[in-house]
Length: 181
Image 1 (cartoon, one colour):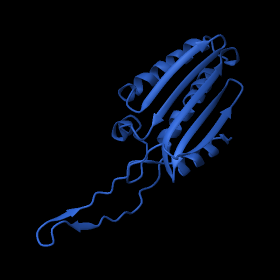
Image 2: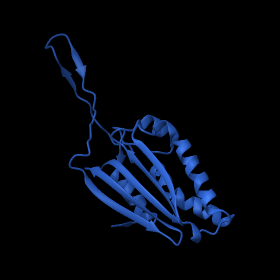
Image 3: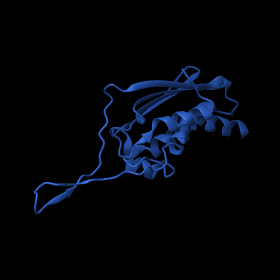
Image 4: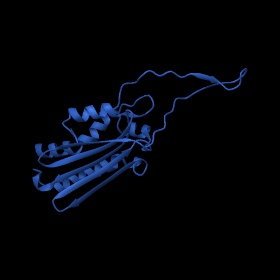
């Protein structure tokens, strides 16, 4: 049972980091502008649109005797734009009665959890080849419905403009034992 918990914990380390990341709200000022000098005033709504063009890239990795998780991040300024993750597990090194079944069940639970986001900024795949079980997933934060993601991950902390802070995410990964490549 203890080994099963350890494998499951490793499998979901990256998913839990997502929920833990974000940053505290910062103060922002909105300035009212006048369209017509005597009658109409409209309030500018601060919205920020980000794209992957010219984004910086960072790769982080963590491994133990049963597997390796590699996360690639694309960010601009301090805004996390996209996260791509590849998790590889060596079945013969997992101390469980049926490690393949354990990983298949865990993957099915994750896929079910995020089903409303699949194809809408979130992609998820799992595959088994010989002694390796691979889980790949990505969050495209420029496309994903952050409100729905927040419903799935209630502990997700977002900035005022509904983005995830790259620097805070990076710090959490480093504290969790990930190494920047």
